[in-house]
Every structure is written in C-alpha cells, then in structure tokens.
Image 1: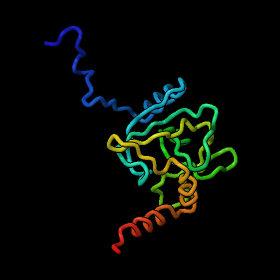
Image 2 (image 1 turned 60 degrees about the vertical axis):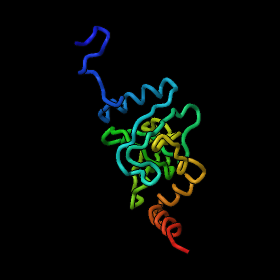
Image 3 (image 1 turned 90 degrees about the vertical axis):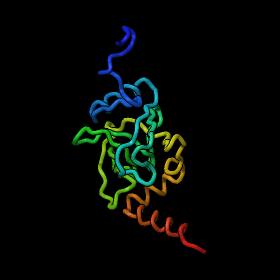
Length: 166
C-alpha cells in the first residue's frame, strides 16, 4: 500500500522523462529561457545529423543581449506550424533568417523572422560526453556549405578520406 507521502503511480515517470507535445515543450522552454536559465532536452530526429544525433541532449540558452549570428544552432518556433525546431542559421535575409538542418540535401531551408527565435544551442551531449563539433568556429564553414547545398557532399568526402587505408 502507498504511504501518504509517496506519489501515486499515475504521476510516476519511468527514467525521469517528461514526454511533452511540441506546443507544450515550446511553452515550457520559452518560460525557462525567459527566466534567464538554460533548458535541456533530448533531440528527436536526424535533421541535424551528423552534428546532433537522435537522442543527444541539447542545451538551449537565452540570447540575452547578444543576438545570434550566421552558423549558430538555434531553437525556434516554425512560422507555419508553431512547432519547436532546432536548426542552423545559414544566412541573414533582411529581417529574417534562412535556417537549415545540417542533414538537408538542398539549400531551400526555411525563412524565419527574429521574433520566432527562442534560444541558442550552447551544448550538446552524447552518451554523457560533450560534443563540440559544429558549435565552434567551424560553424561558419558549416553554414556556408549548408546554404550552397554542399555540406553532406563535403562531409562524405572527408569521411572517405579518413577511411582510406594507406
């Protein structure tokens, strides 16, 4: 029998996960960032592969006074669906940003106004270890190759070079 201090099993969440819908996640993230705190969640999907994998833990921090720049990975609300998305800023287009997933095979992307940007990705963890590639100075080259539709070609070429036997 449950003691009065124990939580009913209905409210227990195995593994500490709190599954949220896109809109609920977006609202929670916005509220946490508005308080000046970082928000941590688990990535779902492969649109940012190879830099962010499905299951990686992503930390999103508020922009504070420094607005984002080309190459940064940001969380934003999709203009049409209001869905939470994490992708890379690849070009400034007037009062909007061209945003693409790193795993995009074309350079079409999505045009997103500043008002839809929520926060910047400041840390990625995979298997409890930090993943730095993609968030440092190399982000400018990644953005350049993304917006020209050549990122996956370049990454494949690099991978093949490392896999050659001498």
